[in-house]
Amino acid sequence: MAVQWLLPVLISALALGFYDICKKHAVRDNSVMPVLFYSTCFGTAAYVLFLALTGGLAAAAHLSGAEFLLIAFKVLLVGGSWICSYYAIRELPITLASPLRSTSPLWTFFGGVLIFGERLSAMQIAAAAVIFAGYYAFAVCGRLDGFTLRSRAMVLIIAGTLLGSASALYDKYLLNVRQLPKERVQFYFMTGLTVMLALSYLIRRGFGHRHRFEWRWTIPLTGVLLIAADAVYFYALGLPEAPISLIGLLRRMSCVVSFGFGAVMFGERNIRRKLLALALFLIGVLLLSLRR
Image (cartoon, rainbow, N blue to C red; front, side, top):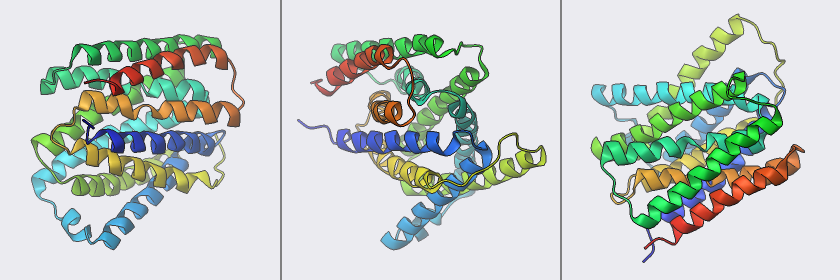
């Protein structure tokens, strides 16, 4: 029997993969904070327009004081995660950064089991173990590209990943425990994030930029792709039977897309060795999708 949440998660993964490629193109040898701010502005505008056209803007805009505080915490989590990740991605190869960023479900997996009491079958546990082995192999490949765990970019990508994992667990809490409407969460999350990044951009601008800012067509596309990926992700996460531990793993199939296209677009090295690590990831996902 087909799992209702599986298709939207796979669609989200595809959009997220192209989002990673556009993000790398936008920040490569570019000033990070304006890229992050402007791409978020375009994403927010796209989502507000979508809500207006579908008649859901009024319902999404209704917010109580308690809900405001709950969503404000999510804004802080994601804002911190994105700032760390964007700075890291500017320096790291996408064939390394994207898979490492995908280690987020490793922590989400354990969080889903420990916090929400999710129970997995033997097949699911075995599949997750293979995926985790692939994640570890990608981390080892980082040394081939000249990056160690003490490198600034590696520290930032790890920090961004941990914050992203906390945000994923918090999404499950907001949508299933507190039962906030997903449209309301996404609306105030995006508008709040735009305000936060505007303030961060102004503060960063006050200290000066080491990199010159260059406008690129991938900046607005980055924001729009993320909104599309998040929209179907929130839909899947809002389904009662959706397990956050598995959704997080499947959504990170996005690194397959970013790995394949990124290796060609950016001419990156050590692709064969990284393909072995990617193969472990794909085997694990296949086992996961064949579960009964």
